Image 1: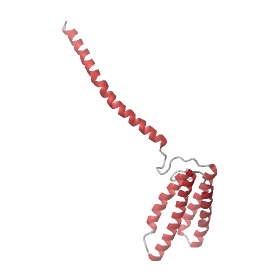
Image 2 (image 1 turned 30 degrees about the vertical axis):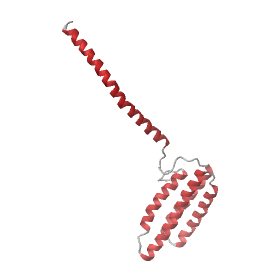
Image 3 (image 1 turned 90 degrees about the vertical axis):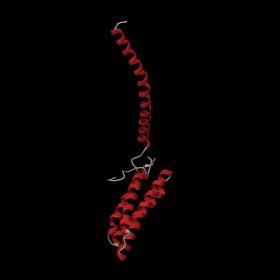
Image 4 (image 1 turned 60 degrees about the horizontal axis):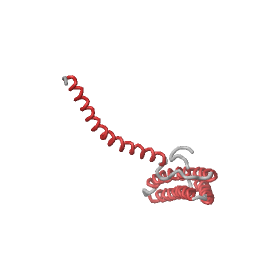
Length: 168
């Protein structure tokens, strides 16, 4: 056997040894990577835009009434800083539409969404009461209440099927 033939044979053996070692190592890294990618893909398909709610099936009537109720609550929230007379009209409309939304809710998903909208309306009333109390005694209840109001508003919007922030 010549030197050249020996070098070729050595290279062939080296390639065979490399493949025997490289293939299992490659597979050991590829399989967990594929599992991880599959898990992320499955998670991305089933997870909603907001972690608080899955994609619920809501009737058109419920979504329409829910949008009206959210609008009324937003108007009451805007009037919160104004006088009692300015706040009372939007607050009455808000209460009326939230009650209508609760009545219209039929399925379990709709009842959960109605409860989230009711929590938003209640938070507006709580913030209004905290504002009046703070004005009377100079307390610090209104600012934390506004922060909570933003969180509750986002949850209510998502439960009806709207984005957490922004216009309907």
